[in-house]
Image (cartoon, rainbow, N blue to C red):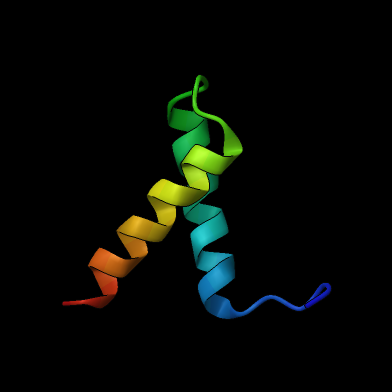
Length: 45
C-alpha cells in the first residue's frame, strides 16, 4: 500500500493519538484498535 492513507485511516490515527495521550500505558496497537472500534461504532449510526 505504501504512503497513501485514506481519510478513514487518518481519522483513526488521530483518534488513536488522542487515546495514547489520555492513557500513556496503552501501546500504539491498542490505541489503534480502540480507535478502529470507535470509528466502526461511529459509522454505524
